[in-house]
Amino acid sequence: MESGSGNPGTESTRDDWPEGTVPHPGERNVPDRNGGAPAVNWLFVDLNSYFASVEQQDRPELRGKPVGVVPMLADTTCCIAASYEAKAHGVKTGTIVADAKRMCPNMVFVEGRHELYVDYHHRIVEAVESCVPVTAVMSIDEMACRLMGRERPLLSALELGRKVKATIKEKVGPMLSSSVGLATSRYLAKVASDMEKPDGLVALTLDMLPDALRRLGLRDLPGIGVQTEKRLNEKGIHTMDDLLELDCEQAGEMWGSVWGQRLWYWLRGEDFEMSETEHLNSISHSHVLSPEMRTPEKAWAVAHKLLHKAAMRLRSHKLWASSIGLAVGFSVPRNMNAPVSRFGVPTRGWHHEIRLMECQDNQTLIGALCRLWNEKPKGKGYDQPYFVGVSLNGLVPDRLHSLNLFDSLENAKSRAKLLQEMDRLNQKYGMSTLAPATMLAAYKAAPTRIAFHSIPDLF
Image 1 (cartoon, rainbow, N blue to C red):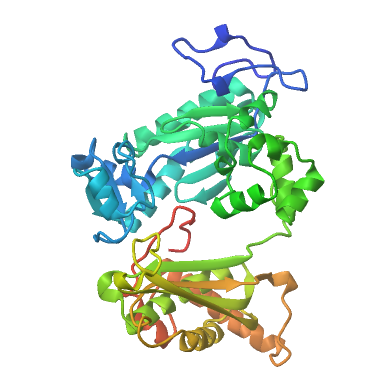
Image 2 (image 1 turned 90 degrees about the vertical axis):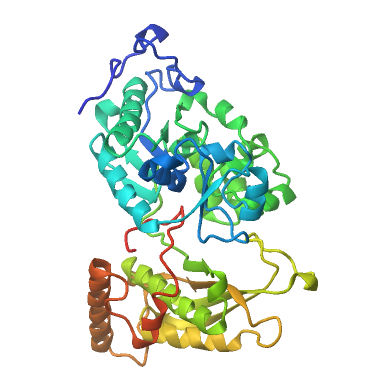
C-alpha cells in the first residue's frame, strides 16, 4: 500500500512537506515524548453535512443552494441536515423549518431519502477501503481505520488522509467532502475530525496534548452533551483546563462510572478500545408522526414497527432485554400554554417503563408494549400523539442470560433458531417479509429513518 511521503521512523522538517503543501497547525511534525518522529494509530473519516451533500450530489440543480433535509414537508418539523450554504445563514441540524425560512428565505427543503443515503454510505465505505481497511463503521457518515506499520508515521498518515478524501470525491462524487482526523486513539481521532470543517485534515499527536485540547470547549468532546455539561458545571468543571486537571480516579467519580476513567486515558492519547465484556445498555427507536398520522390507531401501528426494529437489533447484538419503555408526545392547542418541543409542537409528554423476564422474542415484547400502551393517558389533550419512542433497556449479553425457570432449554433454543431465521430473511428481503400478524399493518405507517448515529446494517 502506498504510504505517502516522508521517511518512516525519522524526524522530518518543514522542507520535507510535498511541494505546495501548507500544513495545518495540527499537522506539525515534532518529535514525540519517546524521542522519535510523531506517529498516529487511527484515521477517522467524517462526511460533511452528509444528507444534504448526498442530495446535492444526486440532484445537480441543488448545488450551490442552501438546502435543508427534513423528515416531512411541514413548517412544524425540523431540519435533520443542512448544507453549508444554509449553515452560512445560521440554519443547522435541529432548526425548525418555519425558523429556517425566516433565516434563509431562498432555502430549498427536500424530504429525506434514507434508502439513497444508505446506498451512498456503502459506496463511501468501499472508496475508503480502496485506500485503507475500515476497522469500524461508527455511523452512516463516520468510520474509523486503524493504521498499521508504514501508515503510522505522521507524514505518511497525512498523505493517506488526503488520498482518502480525494478518493471519496473521485469514486462517489465531488459534493461528498469529508473531514479526516488523525490521532493515537480512536476517540481523539474523532475529536480531530471535528476541529476543522468542512473538508478538514487535522492531526493530534502526543506532543500536542494537552495544549491543543485546552482550546476546545467541553461540548466539543464526543459524549458530552447538554445534560452532561450541566452536571459537570454543577461539580465545578467549566473548562477543558478544569477537566484535564482531574486525575483518573477523580474523573471516574465525576461521571459516577468507568466512562470517566476511560475518557481520562483517551484524552492523554492512550490507544485502547472498549472492553469486550461491555455492551449496549439500551436500544431505542423513535418517530415523529406527520400530521395525517397523528391518531391513536396510527401511532400504535408505528410503535409496533419501532418495536420490531429494536427487537431485531437486540437479537443481532445477542442481547436480552430486562425492561421496555414507551414514550409518547401529545400535541395540544397553542392556547394551553404547553411547552414547545424541539420539533416546534406545543406538547405534553408521557413515559413509562415496565420490567420483564429477560427476553428477546417479539411475542413477549408485543405483550409488554400492549400493557404500556393501555397505561398511557387518555382523554382531552391526549388524543393527538405526534411522537412515539420505544426503548429496550437493562440489556444482558447472551453469556450472562438467565434461562426462565418456566422455559426448557430445548424450547428456548428452538425459539431462538426460529427468530434467527426470521431476522435473516427480513434483512435479506425487507423488514416486512416475516413478522407477527399484529405488526403487518405497521410497515407503511412509519417509513425508514436513518439517524446520524445509526449504523445502517439492518435497515
